[in-house]
Every structure is written in structure tokens, then in C-alpha cells.
Length: 399
Image: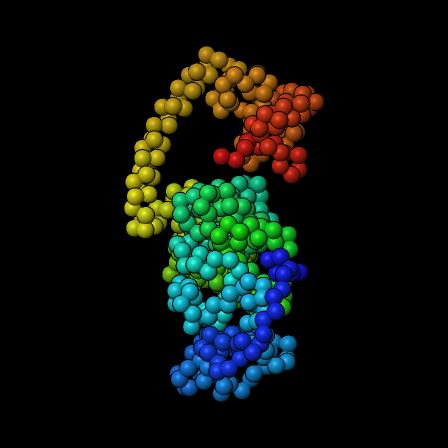
């Protein structure tokens, strides 16, 4: 699999980067060994005075593949494909990451390196998400991005990807994808176009792993640690009790970050991990405004706007009551159906929700023949009033 950019290679002379080793180059060299982390390097620096001196005195100069550590070629390759390698010696290395124990020795960045230092929320969750989870991930990603938050995820299938798709709907979005493989071994391949869109829109796709590194059981926990460290808070949307998502939230809690979770059905295995988080003290959130309420000191003006929204929310019971009164006068327009909806369409529309109903459920609840239900649903679909989900289910549109 090629890198995220188009396959255009530029000749970089190794003579341009040879000479006396710099601190950032020494970090890159250490990162290529895969035998030592930031804590071990720190001990060597205390002994020898600098990262470069530590490298010169390091005895295990062997790459992960068992060969020579060719750090000059790694830097040349990064330059040739438009990837910037940040190390703790570089000014743009994110402060949030530098302050985290066990931070990466190197961070490979495709895209905007400044994005990594913005206020950010990580949205994470299961790969096997339900329609409810996907809808909520999209909504939270979109609305938080629209309000100036960078959205971080592990760019996995399911919740992660949907949160980023939602973020990309925001006009001035910033999205950050952290992957568990080398940038030229992008995984999962299905999300590579999403990654390209993130970079194109001013975000970044990052990895702590050298070029050529394939994903494995060790790389994903390391990826999750970076996700938690880069974020100001982590929001879990659908996660089973045994999930990498809970590993990310554990890292976040250890780093003193706010851990949030979206509730779901108590009998849904997809939400069991989130419900356990809430039981154990995570902040329960119901909407993007709940997330922002945890960070009132960062956006005081925005909280004023939220209060206006809450004032409007208090008036909703009166509005709903009036709609029910109107419905009594016009039985063909139930309160959740658009005005002027034909009777059959209104009846089907009234039975739907965002999670979706099967055709069989709609037949039983409406009393209509199956053919009539199918015709009405297709009509509503063409009018943009419903959407079809996998499994021949029909649901209300996203908000």
C-alpha cells in the first residue's frame, strides 16, 4: 500500500543529511531500533548528556528487522513523500504528548503538524457499531468540529471513521487520525480515502511507527496511548466490555484526562463497555453540549450560547403540547410528521425512530399490507424523509 499522497518520488541526496548527528536525528535512530522507549532514552541522556551522545554510546544499534539502523534513509524517504518526522527535540512536537509518560520517540505526520496542538476531543468506539452508534458518532464529530474542536480517532472502521466523517461536514474542521502502522502500510485500507480527505482539509494523519511497520497486537495499544495523550478528553461511543476503546479510556484516566461515555441500551453488548464506564465514574454525555460543559473555562462565550439553547429547551414541553393539540384536530398529521404529510405516509412516519424499524415491524404496527408499507417507505425515501439501513430497516434521517 502506498503512502497517503500521490506516488510522486523526489530524489533526495543522502549527502544533504549526513554530517554531525542532531538531537532529532538521534531520536529517529533510536525509534528505528524498536528496543528502547522514551524512558530508556531519558536515562541514557542523563548519563551521556545529550540524545546524540546517547546514540553514539548505545550498543544495540540494530533495526527491528535485524539489520543496520539506516536513519538517514528514513529521513530521506520522509522528505520525498511529504511526511514530517517530529521528535521531542522539535518545537512542533505536541506539548500534550511530550508530557505523557512513554511518549513516542518520533511521530510521523502527514498533513498539518500544528493541528496536533489544538484543543481536541478523541471519539472512539467499536468497529462493529450499531446504526445508533454510527449516528451518534457522526453527530458528535460534526457538532464538536463545528465548534472549534479537533476530532481525534484511531481511524478504525465503525465509530472512529464515522466520527471523522461527521467532522469533515464542519466548515472549518480539524481532524487527526492516529494509526497503528507505518504511514506507508496504512491500515485499515478501507479508510485510506478518508485519511486523504482529513489531510486535504487541514488535518493530519500520524503514526509513531517507522515506514514499513505492519500493524500487530503490540502496535494498537501504542496507537491508543497516543490518541489519549493528544486529546484533552476521550468520548467513548459504543464499546463492548472487552474492547480497545476501554484501553484508550484507561490511558486517558491515567493521564488525568476527562473520560466521557454515551449511554446505550442496557441489553446491547455494543454499549456494555460504555455503561460500565458510566457506572465506574465516567461522565455521561447525551449531546455535544454536554461534552463542552466539561470545558467551560476554555470557551466562556460558547457557554453563554449554550445557556440560550437550554432556555429554549425549557420551552419545548409547551411546544410539544401544542403539537399534540393540533394533532387531535388533524388526525392525519401526528406530532412527529411534517405538516401536509398524506395519511399513510404520516402513519408510517410516526412509527419510525433514528435506530430504525424492520419492514415486518412496520407491517405489524401499522396494520398495512407488506406491499403498501414497502411503497410508502420508498415514497418517503425519495422525499428525503427517511433512510434505509442494512437489514432492510427504515429510520428517520440524521439530525
